[in-house]
Length: 170
Figure 1 (cartoon, one colour):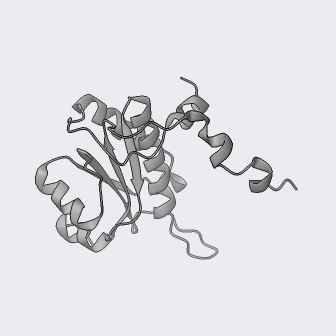
Figure 2 (cartoon, helix red, strand yellow):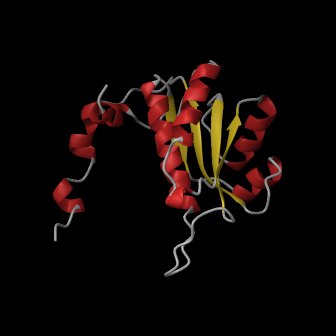
């Protein structure tokens, strides 16, 4: 499938079947995240792949994973990340988001549904998983077999702003 077909097929899934994601698919999703670019190639990302009951309970205390059988908590290590010299911007959120996007698109390619979750309590995740101080949970990606309504790939024609509203050519 070409990139635009893949990107248009992906949609946020908020209802999952009670079916475990196969280990080989988990490995492929993680590999997509591993090869994602990061600022200055620092690779400051740490990923918690949560699929056991205890771990999913911790995630559920921090966020709504919508019943997904697999949740990735994508974190950035602030001590390992690239820092912009002009203003001190630390790239952990950017790096983690690029990794999350790669993982999300690979999940779609594999026939899985996903939803990118940013509404969560990071303190609950840090404590529940015993994360080191420098590790910042940035994104949660819930993944599984969709039991949700499939959205039309053509929805972007009406649900997205036109390019001329988003782009300024200089």
